[in-house]
Length: 248
Image (cartoon, rainbow, N blue to C red; front, side):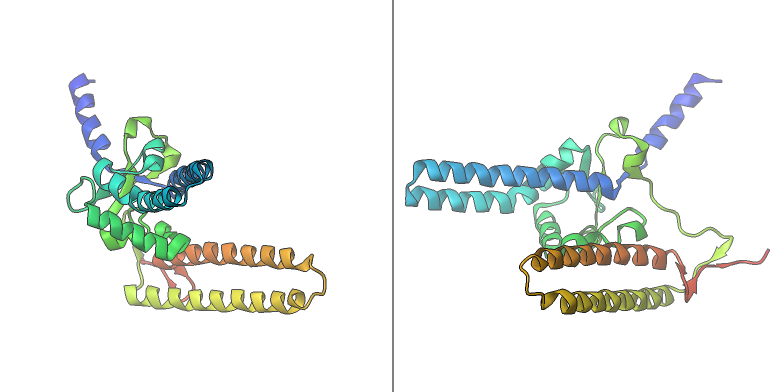
């Protein structure tokens, strides 16, 4: 085999963007949480040591400003936060292929802060593993250095359904998905009401932690169910809007 022909195939494969899986992005978020907690803890330690009101207030304002600007500044100038860098990730502007601008980075943070984990429920249904804040700002989170990545850390762009199948109309998939989401929300709400009825009137203080645990389980379950429904609905795998196989 000609070595030149082998070498010529490498750049094309390497040039394909590698989009980060949710598990990889979660690691980056977790690292940024640690950075945030350490920053707050350090500021509190300094404030308690100095014990001067004016210094404490100034330090408090500085820490708040630093935490608010932390992600937009680092994402726009370096392509990612500390968490992104340590997990080999980079936030990329779809329009330019480079770093997102400062205002777009601010918009990503604002949307992500408002939606919380719900911003990620559509990630498995998108072609480039994008959360809602990625789609709105037309950005993606990609592997920074493909040579350091393992297969389980990324996905390539998802191709639409093959010719051997007929995808239901987009409006049909959206309506069916919304219906399943509504039914799921109603069911989880009903479970929450039942749990509140059974445990809310408990005379013992020990029932309160149990009620909080039940609420947390229901919240996590709702989040996972929504993510699964959106992914299945968009791929045409929900009853009512299934992919129909074309006859040969």
